[in-house]
Image (cartoon, rainbow over all chains, first blue to last red; front, side):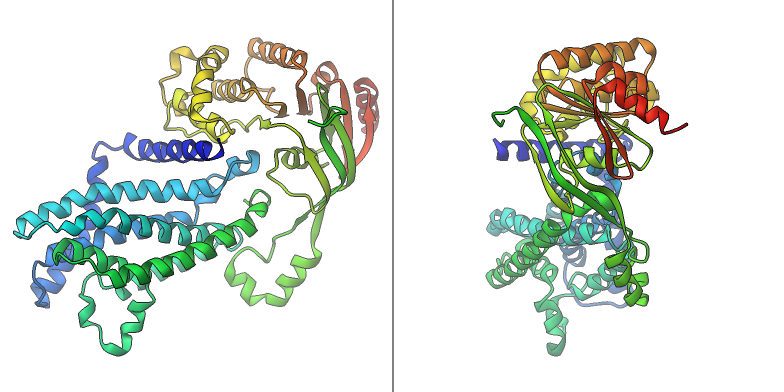
Amino acid sequence: MKSRYYFDLITELVKKELKVRYKNSVLGYLWSVLSPLASAIVFFIAFKIVIKLKIENYVLFLISGLFCWQWFVNSVLASSNLFLNNASLIKKVNFPRDSLVYSMVLSDALHFVLTIPVIFLFIVIYKQKFSVYLLFLPFVILAQFFLISGISLIISSINLFFRDLERLVLIFTNLLFYLTPIIYPESMVPQKYKVFIYFNPMAHFVILYRNIFLNNRFEYQNFVIGSLITLAIFFVGYKIYKSLQWKFAEIV
Amino acid sequence: MKENNVVIEFENVTKYYPLYHTFIGIKNFLFNLPQAIYDLRTRKFCALNKISFNVFKGETLGIIGRNGAGKSTILGLIAGVLKPTNGKINVYGNVVGLLELQAGFHPDLTGYENIILNGILLGLTRKEILQKVDQIIEFSELKNFINQPIRTYSSGMLARLGFSCAINIDADIILIDEVLAVGDIEFQKKCYQKIEDIKKQNKTIVFVSHDLDAVKNLCSRVILLDRGEIIKDGDPKEVVEVYKKSFT
């Protein structure tokens, strides 16, 4: 009964997110593809045409990392004001507040999944093969879901108490973008800086996606390490949320 | 449900709100660290001070008092969105609070979609709310507009929708916070009628209002609060008289 309710609550909130996002724009779906594609074009011009980086299939290389990054950054940035935007609800109704976080991350996840056909399109354009490891994608997506949910729980809870956390998050995600092997391959990172990749969970996911889409490989090591870091972050996030949630109604 | 029909128990309940002045923002917090910690420890606002009362099944309890007396805090504590600083609260049965006009409503969704979403946020499963949705639309008298986004609704229509949602959900305890003052007289009458019906079903209502006549007419018992303390608790007419006198 309880889990049934939880399921209904989250599906209904996700539906709301999707409806709201698409109701006012005819281009709807296109927007969630267009923005990462535009960044792909920018990086393509900068690194392929101007700097002449020697990476094959560079557009495919870029979008295989950019699309999942887009999911990460959209959810994390939106999480800052998530509880504030639902203040009146939090003050009046005793529903599980974390459902707001999961439904937000889930709706962004759906957008990411909807962009995957674009990656397929470029696989065809670049005459690459479709890997059997595509079957493992759901597990990678599930793990990334927990990673983003964990981070979002931390940020959304703490941002209620420190409202300028939002600005720090913006700066931090910007930095993290360049510390994640999205526009360059991880093999180009000098040995002594490898540690940034090792402890950056998003790096593991980007490497995983890229190898599935481009290299017909599943990097078990990255999956295990990425998932372990994810578990730790989710655990911490959930603990922080649980210990602060009683104060939400007082402070929003 | 307990045997003696108590549905809400407040036992020595105290509620402090911290005053988050210097606390808001990492920058302020770090630059004024000693001050911030000092504030956090000492600057508190006492909203309720050692309050005890019981509400019995079937009672319609009115809570009156000036602004800041602690009325809404009591509702928040019953609804479970707030936690008492000290003391014990027991609530037996499920609680539905009447939402503020637009809480939980999204302007871009239609009336129908908002009813479903609202019902789920109020604690029903999808199946349960689908069974009630016709009844809610019927009660709200908004049938012709139910597929319009609610940003096109007038404030009276919004109030109707909100009230219809909350009142038609079968909760054991219903919290009403000053929402009846909206809508036209016709609809207000209907709401009061509905509240009378609910009273007959032996449900418990906690009603916060500044409309003293409504309180006198609807409630079977009234609590007068002032600065977080119970001044008087008892017969509606007497308590309302005491409250009126305190102004003169």
